[in-house]
Image 1: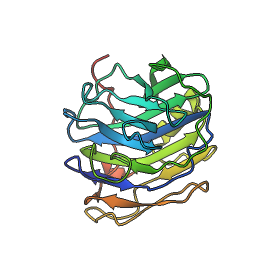
Image 2: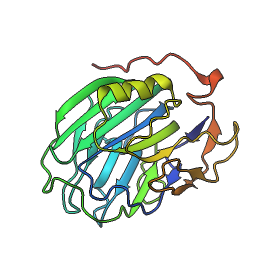
Image 3: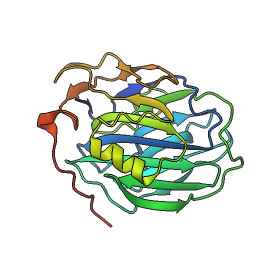
Image 4: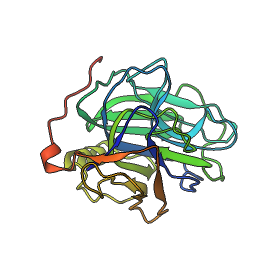
Length: 247
């Protein structure tokens, strides 16, 4: 199963989290199927926000209003940092499932993006951090498929399944293994958050999303009215996963 997020106003609110504190790097990933790509606003796959500057996330996977369909992995280390990220050269398309991975290496000011198990881009971020490790402050808001804080803005219009956040930089072999297993890999090393988003039947409303990681078992609550739909780990929902356009 997967969770269907519609009209840019649905999502899953994780509230205050501590897992992004004191990290030298973070790797996020999810299976995503977009219903539409064109957007006049920033669209979030996930976000963990710190401090008072709501424009800057500790960690986020998103596309910005000027680059619809081009995934950005970005974040900030110190609470006062500006958002620093890396932008995919590939334009995603509506319709097929994609396995998206974003890496932010705060210690080395590097980033990487993988699409369907293959490296899409890697290299320096678009600026530097003031520290080599994230601040020792809680994330004041975190969300899946929506802007951090649970206000229902910057939401993605599509379906999402098996969202994960790992401590550190996952390597190419690990990412390929996770992609190829389609949610059945059992890879828990360095896992901070994992929400499979497959716990109810087709058409049922999401009332809570349980975290499978031992680090911080936060139960996510719905923003708007997300419902369950056929996903990548649903046998009848499986399909081939084409590369995106625009390379």
